Length: 127
Image (cartoon, rainbow, N blue to C red; front, side):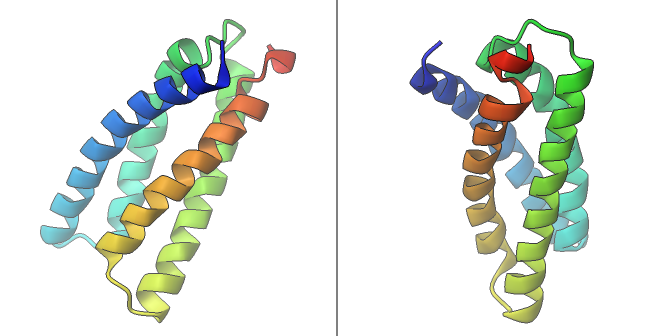
């Protein structure tokens, strides 16, 4: 499957997931839950819900699920820590609006996680 087709499928899964999760993030923070706690809870939900869609539909990976799932978790743990660090730096230290910082992080993380999934998590060499 072509890179552009994979990225399109990844974007469809990601957009559907991230729009829903970002709206939930805004609702949680308006409801009084802190930005980092909200991001943490929703990040975990997003990881679990997108694994199967990305494994089967986006990357057409037919191999076993255990090793790719572990690599998926590792890549998302890296993404989580990066996201958390950016919230600490830009929201806590620099006092930027958390809504904007988190919105930008969604885009940055989407590209980074696509590349990790394409070339490490679901790569054909690892199937």
